[in-house]
Image 1 (cartoon, rainbow, N blue to C red):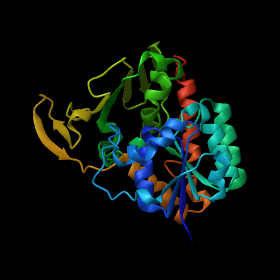
Image 2 (image 1 turned 90 degrees about the vertical axis):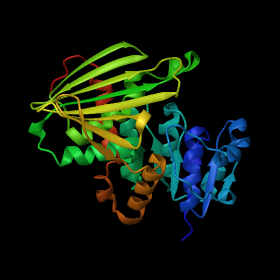
Image 3 (image 1 turned 180 degrees about the vertical axis):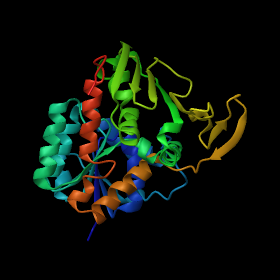
Image 4 (image 1 turned 120 degrees about the vertical axis):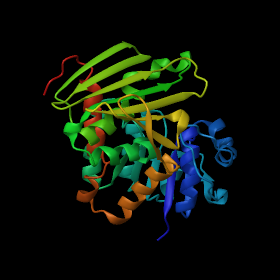
Length: 328
């Protein structure tokens, strides 16, 4: 059977997904309602330098990438998977449309803009039995995969605190569409919910749309998240984390040193360098979606870390945990 992937939204993330899709699919159908994005797309795929997606050398088959100038033309190709990389405002529309046209969906994070849209997408997915994957990149980011491995191999009573910070530059003319709480920290909200479960108590300090901090309390430990959206940043973005144990040893990561985690003792002396294998988050996420499409029945898919169920759980937390003192 011919495996066709469609991509809707031909910005930076669309270009990154396209180069990997060209390796997996027989054909990649691409659409954007912005003519400029379409005209420059193939060139940007070949010269992709997405700072959020450090990739290994891959062989891009640019001849597999086909641009169409009308949305209806996408469905004429019967894509098995549609990747939605538009702004979150239109995730619900395009994802719903794709599932109704018999296509599975991989959408960029966050799932959509509110809980009503999220529930609508779940209904469409349940009705059509089409799988909707939410592309939270931490499930494909090497440092966080290593963190997950460390946490899952440790008694939770030995963990004192997990702290993560995330900085992403956003120009002034784009701030009316995003916020640090909802957009920047959505990655970490999803990741922490799945790794540590739902907190007993939360406190959120949303200073402005550009700055937000969260404190999640559990019976044994706590989580701190910090998000900041400056107008500019030397690298465009930066992130890092600390996993602190009760004996005051810690594991530290910074995006400025992407190939290793550092373990320090209680005196802040380095005791171990933990190497991390470099890989592309977009490639990893796409591979996970394709594997589930090919191997999982629908009920198995619902247990997937990228499933609509986990996407909705994250959406609920993004919407509710800003209410200081949320306690379940």
